[in-house]
Structure formats: C-alpha cells, structure tokens
Image (cartoon, rainbow, N blue to C red; front, side):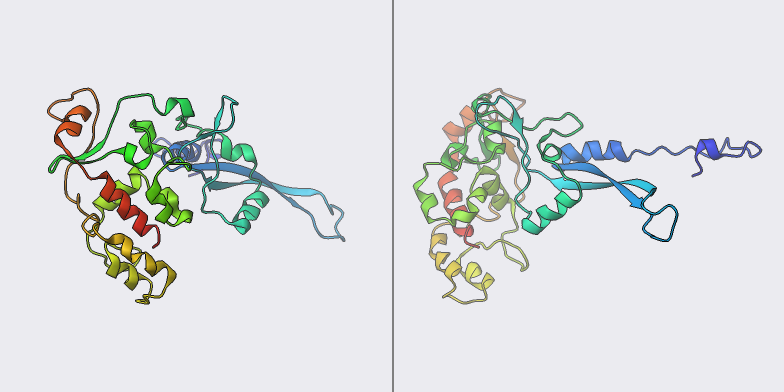
Length: 281
C-alpha cells in the first residue's frame, strides 16, 4: 500500500502491486446509476491555543466528501431552454440545514451526473417517440399510460406524472401522495407479493388497510377502505409473469403496441383505482 515515491529502492517491489484510487470513478458512475450527487468541502484546522506562537495559523487541510439525493428526472423551468435536477423529497428542514453546513451549493444538485448521462426531458420532448404500453405476455393484460394522464411514450412513463391531470378519480386520493399514482406505481403493485406479510408491505384489500392502521375502523385513513371495492385482486396479479414494454417496431415474436391494443385486455382503470386506494396507506 506504500506510495511509489516512498518505496525504498533496496527492496524488490516487482511483486508488490501499485494500487490505484478509483473513488472518483465510482462516484461518477453512482451519480447516474443511483440519482445522487457528490460534492466536496475543504476542511481547515487552525491552531486554537492562545498560548501558542502559531495561534490562528492553519495547521492542517483536508477534503471531506458528501452526497445528496436528487430526483431521477431533470425538470425544465419556464422557457430557459435548460433542464435542471432538483433535490429529492426525502429531506426535511434540518437535513437541508446540515447539507448546507457541509458546503452544498445549488449547482451541486442542479448539474447532470459527472458521467455525462443526462436523464432529463424537456416538456416538448416527452410526447416524442414510439407509442408504448406495459403488457403481461402471459395474459395480454396491459396498462395504458394515457389512463394515468401520462404520455404514451417511454419518456412519458418514466417522467413524473403531471400534477394538473384531468382525472376525476384522483379527487378521492390522498392529495399528498399523488406521485405514487402513475404507470410505475401500477407496475410495482402488480409485481408485489400478493399477501401482506407485515412491515411495509402495501395492503391488498380493505381488511389489510384497516389492520395496517391498528385495526381501528375509525382511523381517518381506514375510511378509505371502501375504495378497494372491485380491486382486491390487483396486487401481485402479474407476479411471476413475463412483462414487456411494447414498441411500434416488431422485435422477434414480441407483440407490438398496436397488436396489444387490439387483442389485449386493458386493466388500467382497475390499477388506477387500486393506487388511489393505497394512497391512503
């Protein structure tokens, strides 16, 4: 582990490898893969002994590295022509104060990952691309993003669902959790374990919702139990199946978007109603 410039010439170093520090390379990769941004803060240690002749002088310097989570897709504000990333919703006021003390600046969050992989979409780009739906190849049941107020493209599916969606059923949802009511949330629910096993498992029906809140039917959240009517079989329905995000262009024997829309069964409304119900969990 000794650096090259500190190795004594008398010793035979031919069988001792020189280790390379790949920390920055790993951080560069993780920024894009895990939606984080790393930033550095220079730390300075000064002599704090008033009796010392070097009082107040810098006696040591080092750099500490911190990270902050960002939302996976960049946002476009106004008509500036530039998309920027924004900080994730997991941080409260105390967290933000801590990150600022660590030296976090707005540009540390807004910039693209150092790997160069840009995950943002301008609003006018979201409708562009091939039309797609998510389909279970075993049953030909499919989820249509249009029913969730999202564009029928890959960008439309991975982008955050619009807040101003004209979906009457959303009025019954918990307005603080509208972000889970989208295609991604629907696919997640379809692939979950069908039975709630405790912990953070989402409920599959009204009984499990009430049980999750201590079995108190008077709990305000338990009042949403009636929203599960007719959608008790959604959770885990696709578990173990082969799932495909279709395309307009045929690839091997996989069905195209047009074929799925013609021959398949649209269960989007059912999945949408289930997500509305669990938004109260």
